[in-house]
Image (cartoon, rainbow, N blue to C red):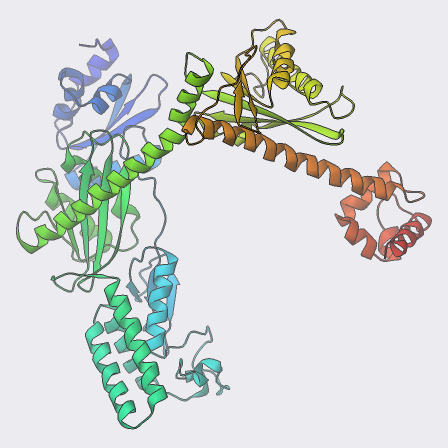
Length: 617
């Protein structure tokens, strides 16, 4: 068992029999875990006295150097305080919800004389009716369109009623608005319309469909077939919205269904939203390092953080599992947060248990898909890097791979691009450009020599001075765009600095051949292998990065040379003109007075620029 410091042992011995929160700290004073306890003495001592812990707790305990406690009067106070402390410190070993997005809701302020439906991501206690949450803006817009297809609600932002009637807009002509702005409908008529909208948003589609079918039949009986066809399309839209939602045989109140899936490493929590007896959507949350923890504890910790930030707490919450005695405490906290009645239950049988089973299946499916995506991602990145290392004879994992390419136009404006992949993924902040200084003409061999020599010379300077970190992180593996000759020059550059080069290889584009230093024959990998595909991605990224920079240099040089061809315009005036106008086109379009007003310019120089502009037209 680990031996604790005398100071820590004194604090452990003085722990009180009281509810409260505790903050575990590492040697640097950083809070690494926040917990709550009904009895601080028993709970906190268990970390230092009991040897059987989960791997996560074992890892956390190994970093504990100190702790603090905060006493509370009740368990509910401890719950709230724990949530606030987690939000403040964001401890590494706590459940941290990475997903802080605000879901869209529909809002209808019925206190207004002619309310309209609005999309909002913030719920306020303003007396308005809120519906949702909807998963994504497209889903909520889909609902709005379905509502407006059936109910001619106004969509404008005008303040109604107006001081005097206005001319109705096109929506009235299309039958999509009752035109309250023009006085064509009363408040009572509009209120009846809104009542139907409220029923519709609460999931009462059948009454809407019944009304529409009656109207369609009446229109058909009157031989108004065009109107009947439009109503038929509205019925189809409503039915389509119904089919996109899962019908549940449950009460019509709001419900959130919360369940968990674990794989021994991570956990996935699924929240399903039921509104008006229909499942309108759901979302899942990855909880890293919670795969081996007690499910009830994980869900309790999740709920505290989730509903602390949730815009809408439903009337009923069904949870898969909670620790003994926690249901009543959480229920009281949820009521306090909502400001009205909330029922929290962990059903073991019957219809509600079946709903939890459905949520658990969704959680397991989301976790499985997430792990599958992660496996594929690792195969394309870390796994591909490992296999690439094996293919080129590197006996360790290549954490940092650098790729080099030369870009020029007939030897003009020659630049080198250095791209960096860390753990098989692009690390774009590490990319660098090199303007070739010592080579004239299109000589890729000499350009690569200069580039690699400068790159490693910078690393040596940083190491000697102890300042800077732009080049001090050296590569485990280097890729050169080219064949044996390019590779030989690049490797020689590092040798000439009396340094041992890392493993290097060239990738020749014609047959995607991998060349190693001194090899007589290339290595040919199957084009479907992830290791070759990674090498191709590095080579193509270096090529792309170099081309973009080279193109910018060409354009800049062209622009500068054209301006300096104008009599009286030298480097200083060229710089001020570009600073003032930003582009050659803007300079051409500027009038004489504006040109003369640029810093460093005079009327004679401005007339020369205008004359040059006229020649180009």
